[in-house]
Image (cartoon, rainbow, N blue to C red; front, side, top):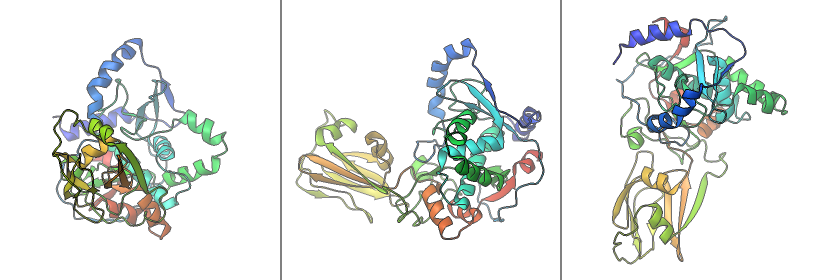
Amino acid sequence: MKDFHYLRRKFKRRYARTRRGAPRIQRLAPAAWLAAPLLAALLLPLAIVPLRGGGQPAPKAVPQATERPVLPEAAAGEAPQPEVHVYLSQSGQIETLPLEEYVSGVLAAEMPADFELEALKAQAVAARTFIMRRLVAGDSSGVPVPGADVTDTVSHQAYVSQAALERDWVRGGKSAGLAKLRRAVRETRGVIMTYKGQPITASFFASSGGYTENSEDYWNAAVPYLRSVASPWEQEITPNLAATYTFSISELIGKLGLSGKALPASKDLAASGGAKPVSSSSAQMPVKVLSLTAGHRVKEISIGGTVFTGREVREKLGLRSSQFTWKRKGSEIIITTYGNGHGVGMSQWGANGMAKEGSTATQILKHYYSGISFVQVSTLLKK
């Protein structure tokens, strides 16, 4: 593995030439287009962060931090910015633009402009931290073609291109909303979150059912700044916090991969475990929750005698969350989920609820990311 300081020096040389201005669009060479499907197949499983609800792989754990400084003011002046090369999945082009303009595009895609300003500022810091972690590490995992740092999809961070911002926001009557997003970016200019001096994996998701998750309950890797914390603020303000799914028993068996397996005969079986227990009255598919996570989601569940993780059930059935209830109604199975997303890191609706109650971006971020510090990008690159 290359030395971190060598990578930082390489990174600084790469971006020293950065200048502000219109983004550059690079068309891929024919050879790159031919190679793209193969590269996508090889690299896509390595994609990280998802956001809000994806299946990102685990970040590496680092030692516990003790320092908790307040969020600094954005740096004055026009210090050179790193460039970000974004693969635009719809056009197949690569857009190159300064860091802060990239963060504005992410903010436009990831959080509604009518959210509170302090929530938008917290999201801007999280988005900036996410991309800086990749840039400093030289991480281009999950990108289907060479020459790009990140895609514009939720496999990394959703992103609205500069052309789309001009077309849909400026000329589309949403100039005031875009100005608010850019204000959030401007007021946090250059600020990122670090842990022991390195940018964190700033994962985030839409909403929780009351608690966030420990990282190891989703990724099987314990990360000290991604701890389960209470998140009650979204309960009253999140639209469609609970979502209901209806499956036939045969459909459920097929989606869970239980076809052909002998299901034990059973009478009514009530499952236990936690504030929102799963239950089933299905004689054909007995269900029992075996354990819950610290975030009150299903950790392990037995369905028809086969043990699944809550994440597996969520992904196999296409559920919004692994916090769910389960019951039978006639010949159908009804599953109700609470919250939306993987649950690790910052809840976006929770951040908005905190901001509505007067919390600052600093307070929001330090609540959802335990033991983090704040630094300027320019300071990070000078080390």
